[in-house]
Image 1 (cartoon, rainbow, N blue to C red):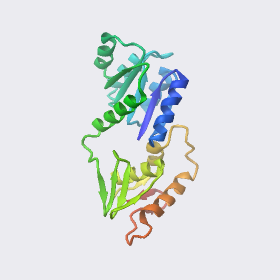
Image 2 (image 1 turned 90 degrees about the horizontal axis):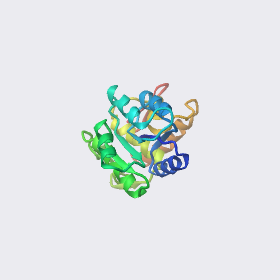
Image 3 (image 1 turned 45 degrees about the vertical axis):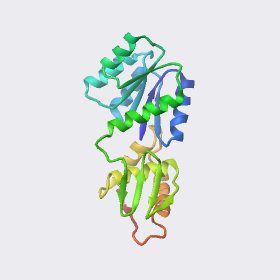
Image 4 (image 1 turned 180 degrees about the vertical axis):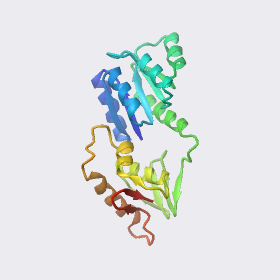
Length: 220
């Protein structure tokens, strides 16, 4: 899962990023509306956290522009404005939820996860392939009843592969869904992660699920 945080308060933005990195998300940051709008229009995100009071282009205009261009990524507005009118206006222009500062990070995190779940209602929450079961909500992996411990990045790569069962997942797809905007795409780190993931998933089992498509990517 990949999140875009458009927030000009760098300390708050970094706190949000740190919290969601620990949850296994890839997180991009923008510190003004212009940069945020550019990223939201040109990259794929599962959710956008959008401050209202932003330099260059305010959050209202960013939200309006995205919805006019039919970019349907869920948006949670985060702002110091707390009147009913402000909240109604934010929701009317296309935001999916609204939180005021200061806020409880526990509630904030729960709302983010709820928005992402709602946006994926058509997707089965439990993924299963040949005895390999992935539960994204509980962050749990088992194969033939044996629990497997993965790092957040390994979990994210496996979830992406399982959601694209029998399809080739390219390195570019993995970069876009698992790493942030500043990731060095020329690095071999993806191959290293897949090697360790394959060892954890396939070691001790007759059927090797994760296969390499040379020069292209991986398939499960």
